[in-house]
Amino acid sequence: MIDLKYLQKNFDEASAKFIKKGVDAETLENLQELFSTLKEKNATLEEAKAEQNKMSKLFGEYMREKKDVTELKAQVDAKKEAIVGLQEVAREAQEALEKVALAMPNLPDDAVPEGKDEDDNVELRKVLEPRTFDFEPKEHWALAEMNGWIEFDRGVKLAKSRFAVLRGQAARMERALINFFLDVNREKGFEEVYVPFINNATMLQGTGQLPKFEDDLFKIEGEDLYLIPTAEVPLTNLYNDEILTQKELPILLTGYTPCFRKEAGSAGRDTRGMIRQHQFDKVEMVAIATPEQSEAIFKMMVENASDILTRLELPHRVVELCGGDLGFSAASTIDLEVWLPGQNKYREISSISNTREFQARRAKIRYKDGKKNVLVNTLNGSALAVGRTLVAIMENYQNEDGTITIPEVLKPYMGM
RNA sequence: CGGGAGAUGUCAGAGUGGUCGAAUGUGCCGGAUUUGAAAUCCGGUGAGGGUUAUACCUCCGGGAGUUCGAAUCUCCCUCUCCCGGCCA
Figure 1 (cartoon, rainbow, N blue to C red):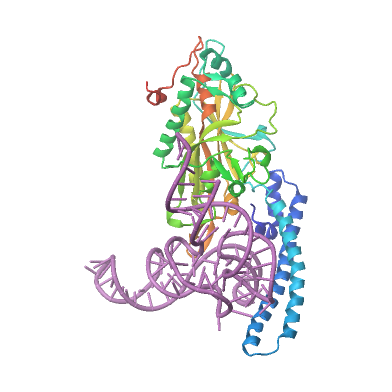
Figure 2: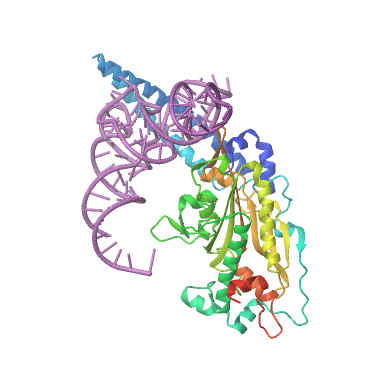
């Protein structure tokens, strides 16, 4: 959630920033209006309540002194009636504000490049040269079929489209990758955590998936529960509504979870292969930090994800997202894109974001700085998306006969 | 799923209609004592909103109700613990 007090006090500055992220000025004005209305209605209501409280106290005194209370009672009754109306007005103002405020994206950092979509993202650097092939490299779905690694049709049979089955070596490599990622993250100081794959609506609101993106989530029927779309949700919300001590920050967490996404709105995109599935594995990094710590941790997280790709000898590039391509909760994001020779392009394999206080404000995650409670900064990033890594290995490590060489670093993880 | 008990501040735990945002202990912070530490003593210490700052409002699991007044009474829900069933 954005800081409404900041918006109220620095309206022009905030508008300029929001425009970078594609929010129009009208929405902002509306929001500011709703906020000041709420404050006004609340003030009126509270004043009335104060009067009622005062009279009730007096009532107690009258009783003790055995004075007549009929007149006082009439007064309180009248006040009570008035309060009911005022309460309704205040509640409506509250709801109107929340509806708009919870749907507002985060403000982008000042350093975020201008731009409206992924074409305006800025490539920061390339890591490792793509290999040159003396044959036509195949796409992963062709390799999957040749090796019997992935069964798309049976995945569809078991569930529906965009589900797949991994078999034999592919299934083992999936598991090897998870272990490899967790081990590297642990080396870098992240604590390994195992969490529920189903979270309640409050948690989903805390990290920003709800209320705006309900259509992207798998909901459990008849329950207030959702399959998680990313481990960012449970890992960050581990500290939902908590006040941490400054000593324990930063908290660095890593965890493996499957992720479930409806992929609403991406009909027709990446329908072939394993790039975009309803269920996929991911190892996630999450950091809870003070505002002073968050920048350095952000860089460290990017380096770590890049390092994992390097250890797998997978060529990739580091891309800074422009304002228009930033996700809902992010103040700044760096994507890692891995080279896919079969598709002849770079594809996203990791996305690392600093949400600053945006999620912390929604999820009420604070720390004690002296006497004051201060919102933390929360950061998250993949290290890495497992299915897409498997795809990248297949395409980059393919041989002319369609076989796939196992990357050196994975051999111990696959009992080789 | 069936039976019983419970939900209060960091935690433990009192409070059963007004002077209770809440005793006491504990934890934490500051200070005294000490060469330093432990022990001891003194002081401070829940959250959210609101205000320049006070006032003031809200919160004792959540919601609805009774009452001039609710942590305290009534109803519903959720969760936790114990016993039993089922079960990886």
